[in-house]
Length: 520
Image (cartoon, rainbow, N blue to C red; front, top):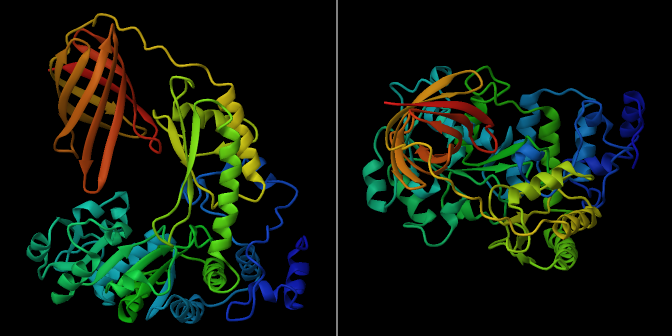
């Protein structure tokens, strides 16, 4: 359906009821979710800013715009944008509707799964107390600890740590029992707590926590909410889902599902209220759009049909790219219904002489542009389907086929030259970032061309180093960890006597910086 160009005519159309079937939030059939939405004459809204869109093979990655929104979600957001309502009133109706659909006591719409986690953690700390809500993230005098299984830590812990709590790692039931105390505000974890083979099960985790009156909050951002819900069945108190991933709702929306008292406290501490979570804001359009996405999940949408369509796309891509000698592809089916199939693509570096990062750059710089998970130094990547539109799989197949077909042969190993300097010993490194600098202390061992060692930074108490030197050319890779975050830097540059300098790659999202090292 092509919408009228002017807001007044769109409003008249909506009032006439022609789009009510698409945007009816509280019952009635919605348009089939498999229908491809009208995409207009072209992505001029981006091109006039100098940004060229791409075919998105990274599925639900936030940095690439999340998954493909359902047509009825787009229509509901469009209609919601033309009217004003009180957010409290809207949430009061939307929350129970979502909870009824997902099978929980209560629910609220949040700004992504991260916003749901932050508000959920704040609810566990402040409990709806206005003074405590205003005090956050200062948790002095409050319950200020969060237990978390060591294997379930990640970068996304930031959403919990933002509240001001200290993360306490546990790795056995015995260490969990010791960690739980009067200071414990909540227990946290990722979706991998449901996976087999962990030191303890999710049910054992929740039972141990509940014996001490500690609620459990799970970040299940990438999961599709299932009914019956496996997390609720295991006794979890709060679960956070992303609305913009496999739910295919507004990209920056999320759901917090679970205990009624904690959901109430989470909403009190979130926007539009003027308290700790004011910045974790969600709009009327996102609330309406997310309700529509969840309505569709249990009415017009068929995950089985989506998987069948995506598997057909994968078969087409696989059959095309495997025409190039040395290229293989295999379909990987998900372990449970919360996820979706993916296509693993690999190639023989003896025949095809580029690494994954080089292929990714070629795909993104060509025309049409294709965004993939082809990154780094390996010789394979995974292709994910949920953000692709019908027909785009043929574009992906041809782009991949051409890049593999035209690829150079195996790369010769670079010649190694005698080192220009002996680098063994202690070094002081200054790294200059975009708006600050820091100092590391390094200790290097030097054996022929090989470098090994350890480092200490103001954040990492001890990390490891490995690298090489050829002539003046030096490359050193560092690996360190803080909280749930891994840091992997690649230092490249030159070494002359008691000085080294060059550039350091900080990670694919973090850019680069300059560095200078002086022997101590």
